[in-house]
Image 1 (tube, rainbow, N blue to C red):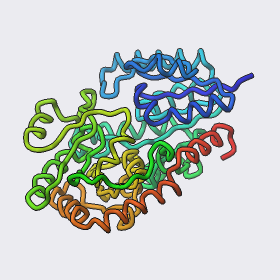
Image 2 (cartoon, rainbow, N blue to C red):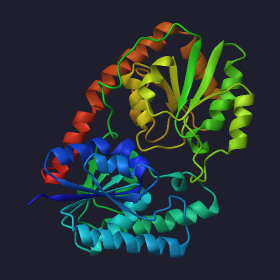
Image 3 (cartoon, rainbow, N blue to C red):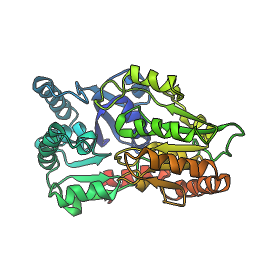
Image 4 (spheres, rainbow, N blue to C red):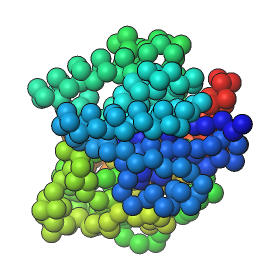
Length: 370
């Protein structure tokens, strides 16, 4: 009989962006692959690839007790019906709810991916701190002592181990969700005005405000374009609003919108900038490296793990737009250094971030060969 694997994730588009190559390879390896997630408009696409999709009423920012209970009940029915041999839960609610249900229903092999700890682990105000306290308790109960937990950086791993959420023996480190090196090709910089690109959802905790403020400083001495590639995310409490976006655009930022083919946009840049407050391992920086682009990012967990400091990019202080502006100016004004960083980035991507290696590691875990 085919072995069944069930992915549990918050929403379909995130699964496509971060886990689809793994699911496709699992299909090729003979697994019967199921996905439980909230649906936007990607269900048909996933089903056409041979994946079985089970809608769940998961809301990424929802806190209604009734809505959460309904989502848990739906997930319970799905897990009971599919009866997977392997479950792989991703994202905060995916891991907590999926871990809870699969543990109670005694799924044989349970895997969780911690792809960043979210705004609750960044925000120091009262409500997020209170939520963080309870979320750690929920993580501990959902993961138990029999699941395997994949981390993208060591800092997140240490929070779970030192916080007694899991044992060290349960942890596995895989740096990011990988990048397709054939799709994201190394290309020379364009012969255009210097272009500084912010490639991410338009969230405040991605450092968008600092990017805007830094652009105002840099433009006083550099003839450069500053562009946003990404869109607002109404379901995320840290998203900017449409009015705020319009203000940025009216004051000099270019908004290129969301793109399904960022591999064609990154080569139009000279520098990729992500001043995020915290990440798992940002995919945009891996893709930037693969395309041979130097990076400026923050010295925080996840971001610093995606580069080789002073080799493929520069680190700046978090929430410091003046430091960010200085580092952007440094690389815009030094073509040789910027191009040297870009070439080193491609080498780093080939060595550490190949999607083929990431997929192979996951299939090994699914088989129990880890």
